[in-house]
Length: 586
Image (tube, rainbow, N blue to C red):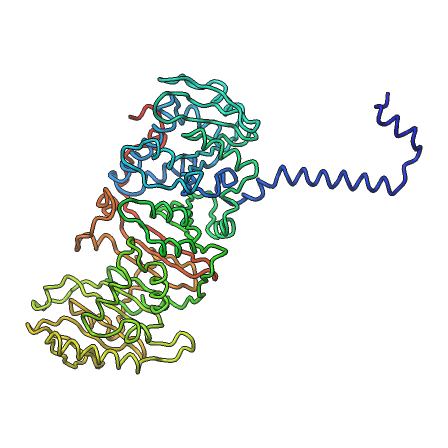
């Protein structure tokens, strides 16, 4: 029997017109396409991005995605020393205890059987930016509100994942309760103190776990259409520049949000003008992969798509490593010192977090030399530059006061037309000679090294303190400390660029490059005492052999970085990754 609607149509017309048929077919195709687009758009928009990019709110402060592949975790355990392995496992255990052990779950038994290839953790900023206020030490509630965490776990075995929600573990305090938000069931703990864990299954594809009920609601709202991480300006475009096949980890930092939070810090608040400048920057992202010899990072930073500031695509570095000897401990090079300084001034002026303020540096140069940093020096420093540390291998007793020499090299060239600016440079350097002679009673003595003229600055105590001269036609150099001029004049036979550890450490991409960095960490730690920048620093320094970085301006709004950290291996592992994540490890 035909449905009533069909009977009515048959009574009205025995033979539908061709126009009506085509119209109906068009409506069906259009409706079907719209439905398909709606159902798949979220999946397509996040293709190539970290898992959960379409679930995490747009204003997330920080995200990190980690692989769940046990072989990669085992590979990580084989890198570094026993001390670094133990430190990594300690942090894993803390994370495990917060989300799993405390609530009765074991990763290997309860999570591994159904979870996908990677999981993502995100630290959310306060839902209302006006809520960014300095956090008092005794205000735990405020602290938790600012540090809500979302964990996104993709589901590859639905039935196993559902058991987490349908048969949750018994809590030590309180109990599990259910509530519904936007048609989605949320299961959450109702303990009287501590974090309130919440879990929700989205489209039977993602299990979302948070430490705050409101964070769960924000994740649901985002998945159902509100602005997500995937829609952040430049996020998808730039993240794909650093994508790797099955990376160990991927991360993202929201710079404007981080700057706003830093501005509210009670000890070192950011001035308004610094905050305004940082709003031009949008994000910093990276992808981490494990190599047989260490850890590789591919990174990218980019400007806000709406910012007025643009970058100059000028990648003209990559030769300075061929002018210093193979034993060089550290080398930092760049493509245009004047532009580098201008960019630094733009982001660091009146910024209390900068290592040194531009005002202080300008004032220091003026005070010490009575010369203008911008006019007398940087005006002709538009070419490639480098700063290197070269160890002292001289047998001369008078030079043993210095363990190493600091070498500065700069190409005196006009970046706009490539013309030499050696004449302007010579005028400034001779002026500097006079300052050192008249103001500090240095002896300014001309000399020669390998037939090339140099100018030596000698203290009143007859200790060779510095030498300056020229390499080729337009590359000026200044060597301070140990006498190392004979290591670069003439050009060394064994250069750093041809040194195998340099070649194996410093990435060859991106190419062309705007700058490189190389540090022989093993030799540096043996010969120098390094300032402490973070807790347990020495453990990680002792496990590192060398560090290499290559950077380039990718386009007018983004900069690419490749980093390789070569790690020592002692052939043992402190703990296996499974035991680090297992609830039995305490």
